[in-house]
Structure formats: structure tokens, C-alpha cells
Length: 245
Image (cartoon, rainbow, N blue to C red; front, top):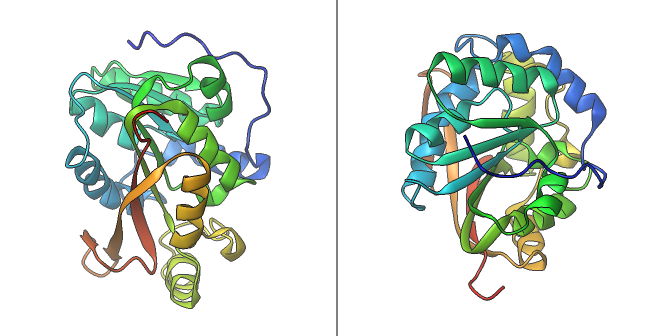
């Protein structure tokens, strides 16, 4: 298990309680690869490979912010990382703990906010991941600062989110939620989607350098997912906290 000390509960969490309640209510379905979280199950191997190709994971300390039921956390643990998974949805964390125990994985799951952990152990993680979460928090710019505070100098931050434009509205919201029913309706709000230029600006303000952007393309007809240069809808970002910062 991770040796990271328990976070001090002294700082307000950057979280939307309605969003947390919605995801918490779906916790029991998280590991059903044919249910509401099917797109995540299809996206996860590509996300994990993107991270493993750009950051050394063996023996490294990794925190998965907004870990949900533990999909990415388990992939990173299997790659040899010492993983701490945090989420503010208690049901999700319980599901993650049970699933990891069934698989014999030693992952340190906690019901905790990123702000609490950053206050308790700033700059202690080699890798910080935040997948499909930034577009769900009230203040994504503040969350970016928190992610920057968690990672050590020279360490890596990986984020996946959704671009904001007409194409992403039509595909990620209208098609995915209302036409194809790939994810529950109301999962995403257009106003909260994040342009890469915004992400880059927030990153620089948080002391992070944006090294790479990659499109994350999902084809619902073939149930396939792959990386591309097209960041107009779903995209992954690889950032780094420079040495000396």
C-alpha cells in the first residue's frame, strides 16, 4: 500500500455536489463493460498506453485524481506504479476498493479531494492523472493549479477532457447522450467543455508546460478507439512540471 499520509481535511473541495451524486448513483454499474460506462472501458487501454509511453511507471508514485471505480488506477498499478486513487464519490471509491481486492491489487483508494492531498503532500507524486474530470468541476483553472501542486518537479501530469466547439457539441453531447445513448443524458454541459488553448493557459499559470496534445477518437459503430492528431472532440494532454519550478 502507498505510504502517503492521510490528507488534512482543511481546504474546500473544488467539486460539484450534484455531479458527485449523479456519478455515485451509478457506482454499482461501473465495472459493467456493456453498461453506462462502456465508452470508458473502451477508451481506457488507449489512455493507459498514452501514459505508459510518456512516463516511467515502474515503482513510481502516481495519483489518479477523480479515480471513479478505479479503471485507470488498476491499469497503472498493473504497470508497476504505486497508485493512490482519490475521489469524492464514496460509492465509487468502495467499488474501486472491492474490485482491486478481487484482483489482488494494492491500490490506496481514498474519499478525498485533490486539494486536501495537495495540502498534505505537495509535490510528492511522479505522475498525476486526471481523466474525464476537469470538465465536471466548478473551477477547472483552480483544479489545474492543484494538479500542478501535487506533481514533483520534473514529473508528469496527464489530462483527458473534451474540446468546446460545434463538432464536440454534436458528437459528444447530442449524439453520445441523446441519439446513441452511449452515456447517460446530462453527463456533459457544453459551457463546461474546455478548449486546448484554455488548458494551455491554465497550465502555464499553474507552472506546468504543455508537451503534447493527442486526439482520442471513439467509433461507436466498431467499438474502437485510437489516438489521432484530431483534438476537436476528445483529447489527451501531457504536461510537465519543469525542474526547479
